[in-house]
Length: 267
Image 1: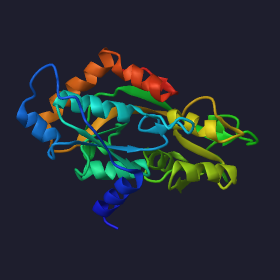
Image 2 (image 1 turned 45 degrees about the horizontal axis):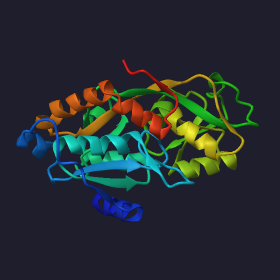
Image 3 (image 1 turned 180 degrees about the vertical axis):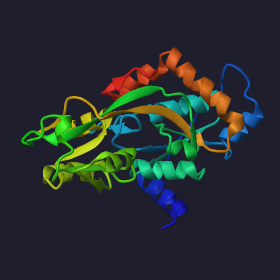
């Protein structure tokens, strides 16, 4: 199935939500900037469910929250355009759609490898990277992970998969198609630990009875706004927007509303 078909299917399954952005903004936007950032006239933002950095849904109330989910409408408001929320099953599909210009915006970990395919603002938030294990696991600390026979789950196509595959000398890395599958793998003991940022790990642990997050960390994620390559006319506008939401408190409110844990202050 090609990317376009996957994108359409993901959108239909999840229900594309079209939000009206407020048409008022503080200063007129240069039409070239708007055309660069929003070539279709609608800001198409990509999210995936399960991470407070992107999208989480309260199972009791159905309330939706997430840093990406909040930042998209704010940027659209500044640009004076509507915003379309397009949901995908996992982050790798969001990044692929952004890379090919089928969406215009997301918030994700800014890495050197990803920067070859998309442009990032300065980091908004830093997140600790850690491991989720079951309570009866013999693994008590991060330093005990890289041992022979230990299987560590990661999201398929994630940065964690690439980094840990390179860094592990003894432990093996196992890809999971979704966070739900990763929870099942931990429960069934087909993996010994699951690795990602602690924002996601805390969400998983809340749902997975008898699990715990190891103290310490194995790295940091730099959460930033990402846009497709080739939209240079709009980059200064997005960079200024990123600084504004950091300074005016809108970013912090979004972090709190999403229940994002495991953060440190971005430099």
